[in-house]
Length: 125
Image (cartoon, rainbow, N blue to C red; front, side):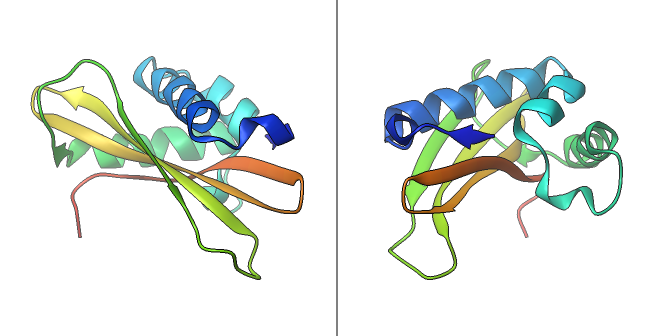
């Protein structure tokens, strides 16, 4: 998803993380795929790839505090030549005491930035 120059601040990126998290919580894989895409689709249909990776992660969720709302953290990269700008880490509840990590990556150069679903994972490595 292409971002406006005004959407790269922490508040805007957190709001996008919350939007993506709620789509995942509702199992709205098609809308999530259409809106954000998925870096790790690897040739699979995007919505099906998100669903499969979510189900795999949800089967082995991370430990999380009991919470019905996602926890969102925005981290900015130091200036670099790779185009990595920020990561939005979303801890999305899937069960009592469990959550999956939904990561959105912000990339681009100059004013042009895009946000994409980077990964969905369960148990910490």
